[in-house]
Length: 173
Image (tube, rainbow, N blue to C red; front, side, top):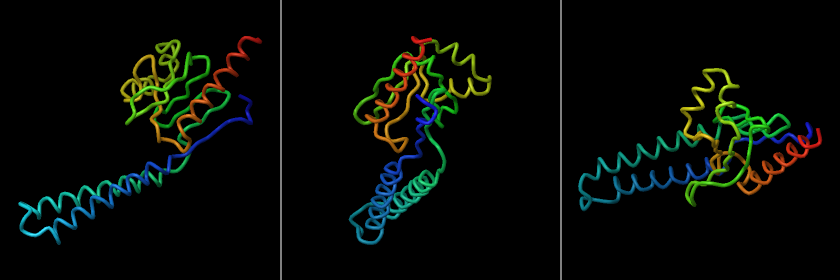
């Protein structure tokens, strides 16, 4: 990828929108149980307050996620940086890019050629943090669907194109 072809993506708005929809549903459910449900619902006060509390907690989390500013994913000449990894994966370490997971939780996955060499290139605190990250399972690093403001097929295409450019540049030199 040329330096001017660097791509940066922020947090996905759909993630916050889904959280707010669930929030409204929980708040409406809790309010209905408390004020309309009547005596036919056993322990209606506890259930209603629990639903309202969960709704408020989820709403706060969705609001905080929506306000998360800045770059979440950067793809450029040096490699791929994802905020949740807090590390840049150089193109030379990427063997392949593909989709994994299942229908409810798909991932864009980077298969690393030499995962231990990559971890060794990081500072010890960064390597320790990455090993404990749920998105790392050697030799794979994952980007969850909906984490950034680009669709999964577009992200796969961008990463595959970047990998092809790096491979062509490596063969030419």
